[in-house]
Length: 304
Ligand code: IPE
Ligand code: IPE
Ligand code: MG
Ligand code: MG
Ligand code: MG
Image 1: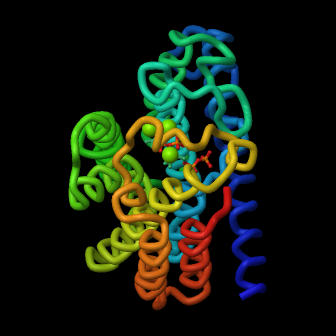
Image 2: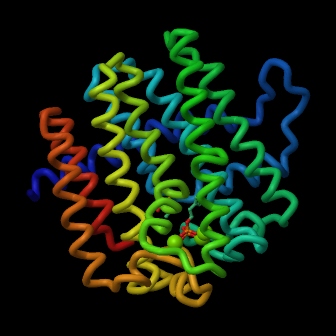
């Protein structure tokens, strides 16, 4: 187990490092073909929202599943960077005063605090569109058809039926009384959709069968559910310093979470079950499967 953890740590660090290079490239101050200038203040705000120490878990899942299915690493990196742009945009907007109104993210001032609200909104907008630029403009050997499929999948994961839709349901749930099924659905959208995409991207890139893509989607769904349950537990049990973001805020806002509904002990048992299911799904994938299973466990049991 110790060895598996070391392997996972190394794989996470490697994913973060290589994704960083790709993100640096996307967020350079050099205008691309068709662009006039890249306004300094907006670029600085985007960079603040991206290069502030995220765990880069979504890129890890893209790269690891791509590796498992023999996909081209260059293409996977562009997808990983695109997805992280969307994730960072979602956090910048999630922290805005009109949404969760948070001052701290990844241990640093949120983008609207470090800059201002209008700049933070624009930084999110520009990161969202940059993601699609990264896929459409990838210099890998991705076929036109694969680009189109991935653009559509990412759009659906991020949009009204995915992350953005889930954020809407999350806000509505503060004043409503959602039951367990409704909470699971909203979390599968707000957090699950991007993680589901991360795990589908690898087998899609590698030309895997529909059945295999579905199996990895189920794995991504399990990871997404575990991710949000763990986030909700940590909101109650962890300190702001350790998390690098304000904690104790879900209870204050009357957020509908499975932990609020069923309690922390239930949630921890649930996490154990989800980790087991996730491990079974990736068992056929050999060494990659072991790393993916270890990552699912890490997501469920992380302390920050
Ligand atoms: C935080 O995501 C927001 C949720 C979806 C719960 P992460 O915990 O992956 O955040 P970073 O990217 O590591 O900061
Ligand atoms: C945010 O969920 C999910 C997205 C940004 C899509 P939370 O509001 O629980 O995330 P934190 O706790 O602020 O990271
Ligand atoms: Mg939120
Ligand atoms: Mg939040
Ligand atoms: Mg949270």
